[in-house]
Image 1 (tube, rainbow, N blue to C red):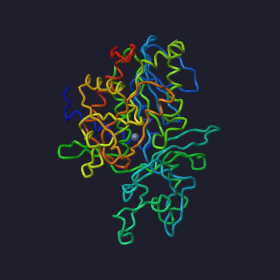
Image 2 (image 1 turned 45 degrees about the vertical axis):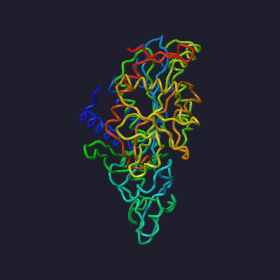
Image 3 (image 1 turned 60 degrees about the vertical axis):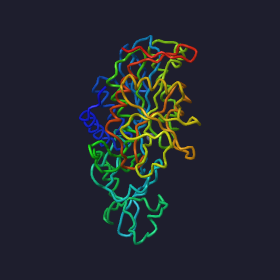
Image 4 (image 1 turned 90 degrees about the vertical axis):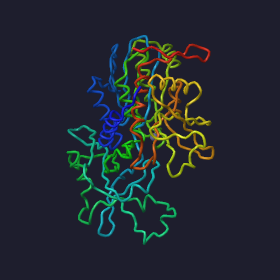
Length: 444
Ligand code: ZN
């Protein structure tokens, strides 16, 4: 397989477009739903009864912030081929009654959502996006909102007033991180601005989940345009690659399942998170909808496989010492398979072998990540999801720098590698054949 630079650059441009249209998890899910609808996928609602047809293509959302899409190959499918990623990213959530007065300024009261790098949030144009719940003719209706202009900014304190800042500074979220919104005359206008952007009346708003987002445009850069930088690469780069591969795949013997969960950055334990029943509920409904028994469901799980896709740390050019001495992933050198002895990552010998065989089929390179043995590292989706749907799973991601900055950096080739592997994966079927052996086949 040849990886043409022009093709990878085009894919990176598409990725940036998707990221810029997706300032929050709600927008990411809406954009994925649009892409699915354009390919003939039908929306299912959790509150309605599902009539699934052979060769049918469907998607369902929960809380408008998590999404699962799947195709039904026929009644006799062997198992589920699931690729999971997450829709949320670390940011600042706008609190209730957000306006705060500070002398001749109006600023916004915000709190942290997830564990972000604080410093890069300063001194750059930011704005506000999320969802509103409004009362309309006796109904409570959800509206997405994105204020599409430079609206707020968190100014740094001058070096003259904080001489020690470059020696390490502990940012206090209630003191240092509140964004400036306007002069004194801006009083009482913030929710009005948000309401106008959403095309609703301010008084009709009964609830809001609003977040800050970075307004800096995505960029493809470097000596030969090999890098891509933008907000929310973790983890929309994986979500985008999963969806692209899913749409290109040919449904074979297994049920391809593209799953994107909210709230990974805050522990996944919400009703729509990876540690909820969402995936299990959908898989059981697929099983029943295809006219199969509970026994068939358990047999299907034994021949199922999950790729938990969440971005990985590339070796840092200035701090290479922070990486494991041997397993050192670099940007554009392939999909990263993550290992953790304590099983924060689900990868084991079986799942690594299965995943590598998909990489081989796709002609895509892979590389290995482990934490330094003296660094704790982060957690991800795979092991939480396993509590509800226990299947063979591998934890992987695309190599990136500056994870949890509002402007992260990754590689243009790696997205294409993951799309190709996802396509192979969604088109195949991993079948357990006893004694710890697996057969990979069933391509449609
Ligand atoms: Zn992530």
